[in-house]
Image (cartoon, rainbow, N blue to C red; front, side, top):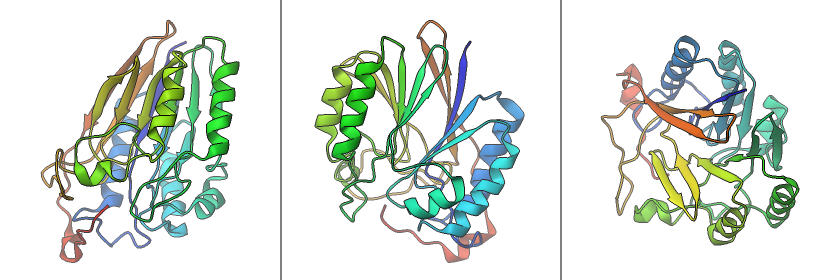
Length: 265
């Protein structure tokens, strides 16, 4: 049976929904993504891959949980560098700081936490324990194709400021992935732009933010102001093949712009 997966990432919901995030209404853009899913896609599971709240706000997570009642499928929450894991767990009741394994008939979906050893600037790591857990999980997997979700990117995007805050132990992580060819895809958020590239036989994907997009190939932080929200759809086929589509939606012109806060990531 084909597994249909949606990914929404980097929602950056504020504690107060009337506070804009980098010039946009993050709540309105997320609502737009969820409405599109409800109207245009049949999805088996929704992955929310981190930075769900901009300041780790309990109120933001509670509001997110309420919004998800419109989505008729389970959701898997992951933490990003802007999130508060304890507040997130309190709301979603998921062990977001652990490696989680979801076995489907023809695929295995993994969700790994990359918020260990934060550098204070936006970077993160996979903890030593989770790296061991991942190695053990992949060793026990007898050939079923794997799609792994995480927040931080493990491949550079050729923007100097972003490449400084990618996955800190990417070399170790990528070596483990390369040693396990059953890992077909590694899917992340964090970079607020689209990536689709092959590294040592594995497809690495990054997905646009549901809130605002960052300009590509930049030395310093810059918002790509003309772009609206985005999300990704993945179709994981019975034969181990996978298809991916990024959906981009129109930017909403918001009345919140008077208090725009353009800050670094």
